[in-house]
Amino acid sequence: MPQVSRGGGKVESFTSYCGGLPAPEFSDNPLRYKFSWSPRGVLLNALADAKYMMNNKGHFESKCSLREQIVDIPTGGALLADHKPLDFIPGLSLEGFPNRDSTVYREKYGITDAHTVLRGTLRYRGYADFLSGLVQLRLLEEKPHPSLHPGGPDVTWRVNGRDDIVAGMEQLGLLMDEIVTKHDTPLDTLSSYLAKKLAFEPGERDLVVLRHDIGIVWPSGTREKRGINLICYGDAHGYSAMAKTVGYPCAIATQMVLSGEIQKRGMVLPFTAEIFKPMLSRLAKEGIKATETIQFSS
Image (tube, rainbow, N blue to C red; front, side, top):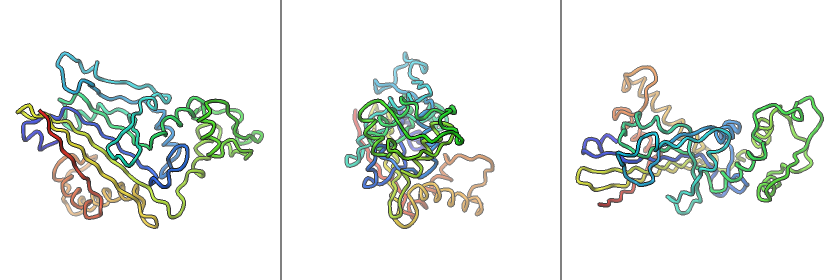
């Protein structure tokens, strides 16, 4: 972003998707997903509200107010219906959907001229549809259900609904005559079950994918589309991709604070060159680096 401003350009659009996934060969389940962190947190994320800016005309028009550009998605799973296929890596069948409030990053990133600002979650294609089916079946409800009280009688899973969702639930073992460990609410009961069913097995790898799409207009009127990919695989018998992409930046930042390279105190965002340049350089030495593509049009 800083070099765009220095060159007199303006960022018209910024779209970013990121996701922690199982490596493709380990995504063979109805969710196409395995849990590398809290299952409850993953499922709750699908129920959250979201907000983003979108101007489908592809260029800013002054008559289009900010209010008209903002897309508000309510809580309760509606954001799953806002998913779309993403083909920036043709060999991976990916989809993305909005994640929380993206509009605040217009100011944080210094891209106040942007007509489109969206940050989203990446998953393998089919995730949103299947999870939406579970939402419709009220299996992600947070309210206690009398049948799921730990002291209540034994229960097994039973469901009526869409054939594809039922088939997926059968594959997950949800419709077997297996006694369910109850945790008061459908959400907590399902989270506990999936934590065991969709855990990474020894020798399985995960994958982190990050994608930025940036639209830039230069003073000459030339438009630039910049695509940035960061792909990191976990090691089968070592660090996971999630551990690398979260742990290495934290460790590097800690070293920078201790060595005096970072002088600021408190909550410091890594938006200044004196932080992100050495950070990116040191991450590259650990094998975490991005690739970039650029296209120009008049």
